Figure 1 (tube, one colour):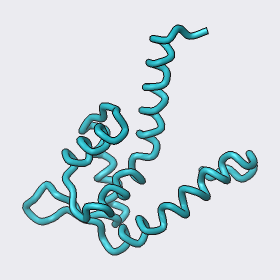
Figure 2 (cartoon, one colour):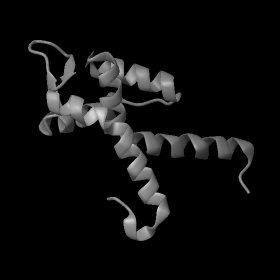
Figure 3 (cartoon, helix red, strand yellow):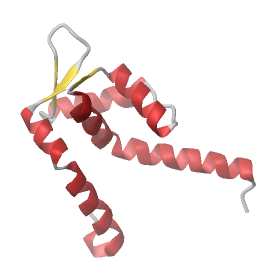
Length: 114
């Protein structure tokens, strides 16, 4: 059995792994709310909202991936990013997609989305 201190560490690490796995979705949702964001602001908002420390080394590669997918674009001569039309459309469908992901993941092993 885990003692309370070990259990707290276990919960923190588990929550961090979940946040890391869903980080692209979280970033897009945050950007939909604010329309324009910098990676630094995203880190601060995630840290505050989820009570977890997240590094720029974790966030910047996700921003690069989202840019490559055409979901966000960088403002010229700036560190701020915007959602593209594709990103806005994707973000608006996130609640439905998240529900499908969770439902299918827990309903049946044969329906797990990878």
